[in-house]
Image (cartoon, rainbow, N blue to C red; front, top):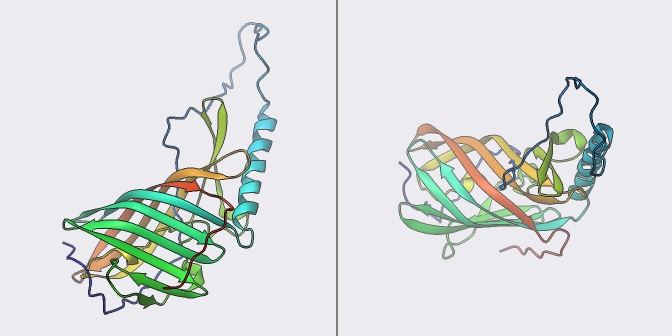
Length: 258
């Protein structure tokens, strides 16, 4: 069992892997299925507008993904996101609520309320100017982290080219069409879990599954961050599941060092 708040005076060294989380639509979606069997008789002329051709659909999808990659790899790209979910261990489930992600270029702020044994901890991480900090509650002092830029908790830090993004196809929502993609992402690393007996956390398989619009702008999705760590010396799996909604794309965000 995880125990209460770690000693705030002792910083924990963390071995992290660059990660990605995945997002999915919260609304029910229907993906059209095209039959490969020819009709037995000539089909009547449809009364409505013609459906877009398969090639046009593919082109629109490719254009949306290309626009998404161009957007999130742009120098100085800023955005915010909200998230909530759960941190699951072999013997515990910790609610994660009121999560906030703010990103301005390479600078990152992540803050979330994590409940452990009935107590709510507001945990916050900042990465500013190549330096990283962490505190496990608002009254705790900040701790420095050994945290290379490659381990950033920014949502799109692992995307460099189109090859880093998996195309999962179109998703219809009413009259609108969105496109589902996935990629490596870790917007909340297990190092942020406020348990004093959790050590040696490692991220093994982080993924964000995300809906983007026709212009390539992130909308919402789901993140699954898989990893492991030692709880009182015993190796346990860690699974963090989050629902993520993106806002204020391209709007200025100021993130200060503690």
